[in-house]
Amino acid sequence: MSLRFLSSLPAWMTYCDGEVPIVLVAPHGGRRPADAPIRDSLKVNDLYTAELTTLLAARTGSYALINHAGDRNDLDLNRISQVRTRAPWFLDALLELLSALVAHHGAVRVFFIHGWNVVQPVCDLGTGLKQKGDRVVPASKVAAPTLSASFFTEAILPFRTAALAQGIDVALGRRYPAADKDNVMQVFSARFAEDPFPAIRTLAALATQENLNAVQLELGVGLRWPGPERERFIEVFCQTLGKCVPLTQEKVRDFPVFSFSSPPAPVTVHLNGSPFSLPRIPEPTRLGLHFHDPVSGLGVMGGIEFSSAAPTQSGRLMLSLGGTEMVLFTGEDATTIDAGRVQVGGFVWQSEGDGLAISYHGPVMRFSHPQAFIRLEEGLAASWIESAAIVLRLTLPGGFGMPPLPLFLAHLRGEVRLRDRRYAIDAWGFLDMLKSEETGRLLPRRLLSLPFGPDLGIFLSWVDTPAGPRSSGVIYHHGTPHPVRPEDWELRYTFAQGRPTAFHLSLTPPHPLTLQCSGETVTAIPIVRHAPQGSALFVTFGLSRTLWQGREARGVYEFSERRKPEG
Image (cartoon, rainbow, N blue to C red):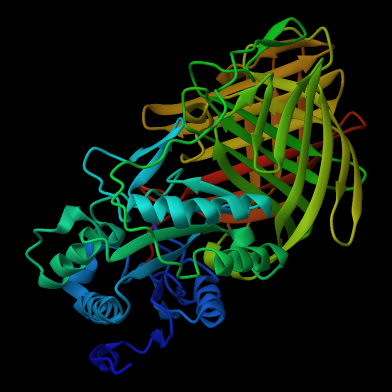
């Protein structure tokens, strides 16, 4: 096909000629230069979407426009405001290509391929719609659908069914519904039918005449990185969305109703006589793990966050394997809390008597990079996907009662199986039930856990809030939890190259324990935590070792401070 726009494409854009009326677009497939400055706020490019889009185009005979090198932080091809003023060539290319395909074939399918940085094998479909109960509805009061009801019923639903059968979760606007007015996907809807920009107005007209159906595919890491999950996704796409089967001509106005089961009734679960908020509850709950196994050296961190009132719940599990090696799972799922059970992809938490059964089966992201989270995009690019099987049992010993803070000294046993190794876990540590706003994750903070054993454990937290410093802590001493006031403790650090390598803790009464101890960093994981507002945080967290009166505590720590302006 002879196309005028080819001469205007920048060097970092690739065009793939095709045979069928399908157009694939990878707007964020580029890379941020390795030497680019660290900013307070940065977006990670959608790694592997350029390669994946190239594979899909070759397998289906589709046309493709692929950003293979441009950094989205410099120019975002998925933002209407930016392409209007800085990349009109992109709109011209879409218009010329799509108009030609409609003229020749009568209709065209458009798929924007994006990345969602959760590890689970999930595809979130953005069409200006979202699932609400058993219906599909507009994602907002002003959002417009980017596809026809017929296309949804005859193409999207078979894709979803086939994907689920292959263990691939398919969401309908769960996180990225493609509904924002600045999202280029909305150009393919009636929302822009009167736009003053001719190219945008014409693209909207093609969509409203039902000659064009557009879908945004947000793909989790498990579906983008090389591996069996990606191969299964490619096969499902080729057998469903990648096949141009004529749609019925009937003009269906309403989107379908799904036959999903009703949400489960509220269930109250108790641990040691105290309410344990795994059932449906009216406010968010967050459960966090802080464990360091003394024999294997394995660190277990992460948790889940959920609410019966929220449409989604999230989970995260990080394993520190020692040195620079880490394993990570992150996921987000539709909220379903049933009989004390919360599930995010293959990550399952289940209340059991005096504790929790925690398990994960599925793909994980594995790193071996000394600064994997300093420049997150570089770290992600150096990672790989493999399968893991993790089975844990967390026990809260009886007799502790409800602590002054929702921090529980706990015992963790279990097993972790990776591709090349196996770990047994038997460690004391902490389970926290702090709410997101109480953790101070996006503020400068100091966290330190010292689990000496079943009779003694210390957890301390200091957060620099806008209203001033806030500190808190709890000591478990012979089965009784005691609060620790700000004036009761002092934590000093030793630094090397700006990172903490050792610490000294002083604890004084009125609680029943006076303690002076020193600890060292066993594993240091440096990261930059970018902030939507304010300066980014330079963070060091990881595993520590502390000795006191011949007793050892293997714990977890974090030290973070605001990024200082360069120059």
